[in-house]
Image (tube, rainbow, N blue to C red; front, side, top):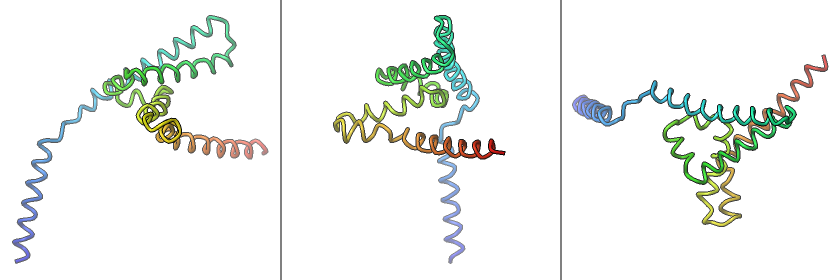
Length: 155
């Protein structure tokens, strides 16, 4: 009795897997990687272009290292606010996540989404939903690495 039941369940499971495999969209890994590479590279090219302009205007290297991220974060926020960054992310996928503009998008997107709930419980509370853990672990790791570096430098 139990073996008949097990055989039916196995057939049903196999039929389900066959049906599921038919409707799952086929992954286009090479195409997705190429798009991510192109979009990520384009974002990095914009950053390099800003770096070159700032250098040509005679800013010291230390200031250029501050100017470029500030402008890139602004551009990421501006493109997110206008809806362009979302369309770029749909096309380029992970290529939009890695650069600093991805961090800007991660902060601005929830803020825009929850603005109807007000500045305190909407924008302020939700703004770091995605970026908060990145900041916490990034700062935490930098402290740990700094302490390890300090201890190593004592020897």
